[in-house]
Length: 111
Image (cartoon, one colour):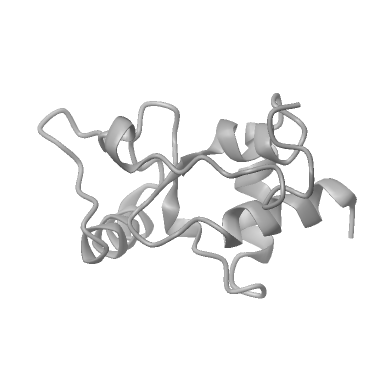
């Protein structure tokens, strides 16, 4: 497994209940701020295998990006944790954003 993928798994795995991160913030915390699209791939291919809380990762606007049933499942899982989209269809990131520390990201957060 690539080091970046390992860091992504650690970062996403450490998102606590009731909090979210954006694809871009996960990528940045894992050491590659421009790799937001890679986060989607990693969550899709490894989320279930590693028991990742994939539903806690949203787009930069704080919205669910997944279409159809997958998006509805994500919204339901988030709602069960007390996170709901507001009237504009976005989660209040100021209230629900998780900021990982450097240890959670394998020493790469903030770099």
